[in-house]
Length: 148
Image 1 (spheres, rainbow, N blue to C red):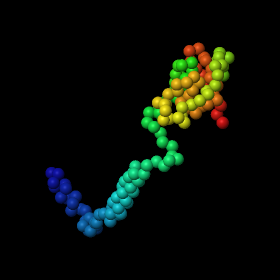
Image 2 (image 1 turned 135 degrees about the horizontal axis):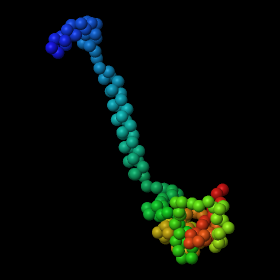
Image 3 (image 1 turned 135 degrees about the vertical axis):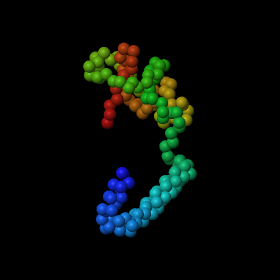
Image 4 (image 1 turned 90 degrees about the vertical axis):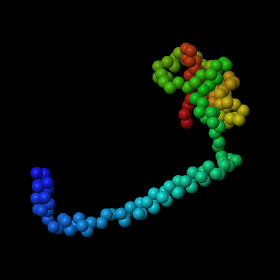
């Protein structure tokens, strides 16, 4: 029964549509330039990667030693390392409870060849915050930095 309905339906199709289907050409002409664009982009990417890796850094370039730049911001106070906290309490609410200890006197960021990126001296940081005030709050250390 289905084949009879199909045959009947095919008989009713307009010849105009049959002729168009016979003469139909796919749009493969446009796909040729797309292939060339993709190939050119891949070649350009390859050339950039090779060029970047081929030329070593210049004498004036900043080179980061692995491991040092990955260290969390820390400060050494009285022989103990304090790492930057991810949470922060409102400064103004607890400021009256702070005990002033001093200021950050040096950092190890410019002396990466002789350290493992950890501050070892009292009031030394591993980030450039020299001059920041250091306070004690309960068991923690608070660093007050003035952003310019």
